[in-house]
Length: 335
Image (cartoon, rainbow, N blue to C red):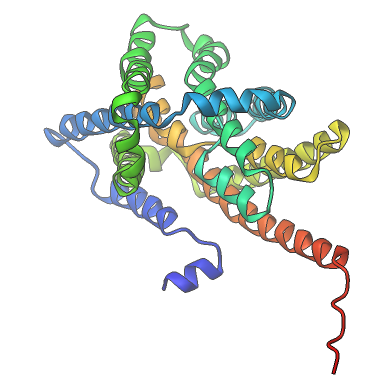
């Protein structure tokens, strides 16, 4: 089964995400279970950001600052080009309002970490630069994404509330800073616990997705979102990813980046983080809105993984062909 999924570039975690959405649609948390599930999801978010803070190496930040040209390009793609495209999408008439907000919210998120680095490695790009760019993007996203949400979304619907600022600080920023300041004592242990980190990363996201979609289902999500709306969102996500991939390719050519750095710009600059998007959405938006707002994020996440997996393999094959062509022919054996 794993071989079959790998052949079609289908991640088992994506299937778990889809299964969680289905479970939340059929058996959402109701009544007394709803606050219990919500409290568990909040605890998962706090633990997630605490561990991310403990994993962040200060040396990686210092090393990454040296390749500032590449990192600025990735930041510009992530927090400038994407939001501009998102505003254009948000202005398209006929999209269900909460899904339109979700599409705009998607464009305000930071880049992924694991998949950006993984695809860069497969494509034989600059892995060290990918680590730094993805780390910078996620660290900046803790501050930039809520600010952009306040300016472009929340500000249009009643302004930025004090409660929202406090919630961001308590659930996201303080746990992250606490983990980072404790890194000298717990960083080594946290880094070695790969299974624990994977469980917390994936488990907390699944829990938040379940509670968010469950609350939205109870509030009538599937009565408001028609199959036509889902089809439109999928098409928009495909067009959005295509545009960003093309623009990042053009930017790399204009900047005359070496091949390895161009790959970093394309993969780190075209990704949007589900791991950051899920907890941020649960903090920044009302519970009844989160499910619909997260739909575009989940859909885009799956599309970007499948497309970039194929793209990375093509880059790898091209690099191997170029390397073979550059190598001198092997001398014939002397008989």
